[in-house]
Image (cartoon, rainbow, N blue to C red; front, side, top):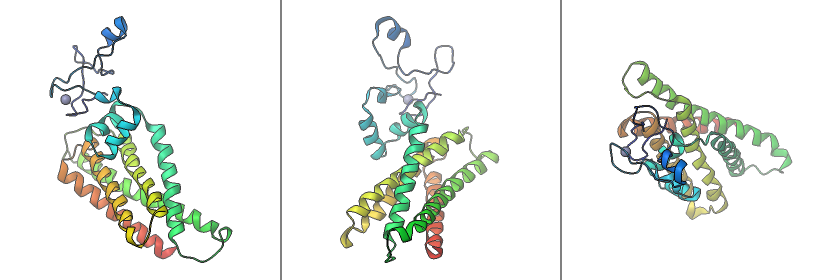
Length: 231
Ligand SMILES: [Zn+2]
């Protein structure tokens, strides 16, 4: 499926069938020129991001622009990259938890502790995603939302939002007594990204998306808090 990144409407050809490319294919085949097609609803270009460099798309993602999320999660296929980034973020997340622990022992004595922190990071991520998916499927089950949800895509989107936790590494490296707010800032970015992903992929309105994002984040912190007491 291809959608207009501005308004989210599905892009169809003259016969009303699904259109895969966001440019005039006939013109491209005959002349090699890429002419972006316009959306029938908002009259803007369907997907301007195909002409953007990857770093500019990443910048718009960081600035929380919904069109960049539609481009990356719906019009493009980045599943493998998202999974790799999520795994890397899990390692960073575990390392931050491990490094913040003030146990005064040698590195090799604390190896098991790192694996335990990794398990805790995975658990809190799974709880966060499961709660989002459960609430969305509950709404779908009782027909409270008319939008058909693509669950694998929503899962990928929620994993992408988790990747913002990679920034914790900066908070750890440059963290001092006066920069403790960086941890809260990273968490706020994570919450904001989850909200954007839910708003675009779940069919929820802004208030519902914000409520689901907040509830799933509270659950994540509850798991973190209990895990911290146990480990
Ligand atoms: Zn449009």
